[in-house]
Length: 510
Image (cartoon, rainbow, N blue to C red; front, side, top):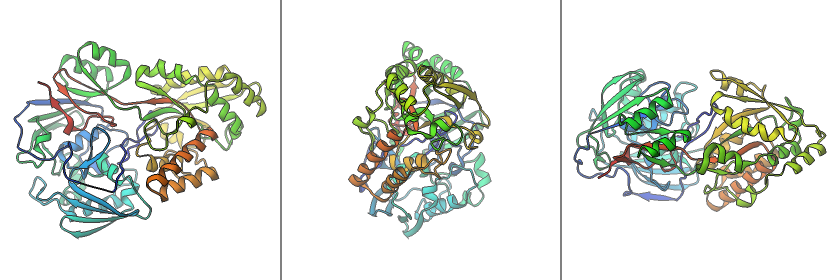
């Protein structure tokens, strides 16, 4: 499921799903004998709340992939190179751009013995259509028409082509709950009802969950640890202290703490840089700040950024400079397009003068304490061309402020993977990430093409779309950074393109 995450705004995390069909095998949970116990695996997290209803999991908490993944099977998994691999689904095929056939793994049961069959999956997707407003619903899954062909076969039909569904299934939109529990969903607040590798044995609500490996699980070979403990940490420093003291064997990490982790002999897993933080110049119509209504002004702001210096200062070697809404290595990225805004303060001042702002203007920016360092770095470069950035922090009411229409510029973070789906969410006038409903005929037309096409045609449309968005200067982006995950001296995992390591990738070292 595409998850929106916060820099106090929004983003999504996933991986690329391409190809027409796949069948069993792969490197994830693919069966085998129950492995010898590797003892206890204790992982840190930063949950804002706790629930075992995967359809109501909070936006932005990627660690829920681990919590839900302990007790629920997912339809698909993502391999270390971003490839889609089997989970509950062992075979899939797009028989048309809007029709996906799924074949389920035989013999899988929920913990109470209820079979995990096509009817159970349909019950989950039907539940998404009526889940509480504001929940972690996926509009793409909610729009599906689900038909049970037979006990192990499903036909999924969407109103528009949805080539990223297999990725959605692997990133939160494919956790299948026992239909019996969905009839009484309040029970899922504290009691899971899944078919996953572990069963919940004890918990301190909101603080700690302890799981025991499930006997005779179909994918046992991928889960060597007999006991799994997830601990909630509200402080990044407290979590890091627990990592370095050995109380934890794994946790997400921030770039500022990595050096001390490496010095302590811990393993740092770095995802490929695929997310970007920056400023949405949401007022492209110039309603709040008239200057932003001129494309030359937005381009001037982009020419004023010394992206290499900003990324080096904030992310070090973990970051990549860039101005595009698609990072390198992802469909839609173009090196020539990314070279448009080379650092050129003189050209920035020239464009401002041509637009009628030779002495600059004032730009209020909606920010949050966690993003202020980034915004201040951008503000420093903009001040050199006469633009006065006024930073105003909001925390609890950040989202309501972002959607209020009062702000011309808003700090945000976004992970544009899978690209077609996430460009729709980010750029459509009705998209979740388009705070001020910005619109442009050329952008809207190309965006529609990305949703109607697949394969090479879609890739071409995405590349053109990203280039036009860049030329229009809708964003001020310094570059891209990947998520970090740290494990103890005797544990390894694979973060891939995820904010956390999936549970099926953890292994004890020799």
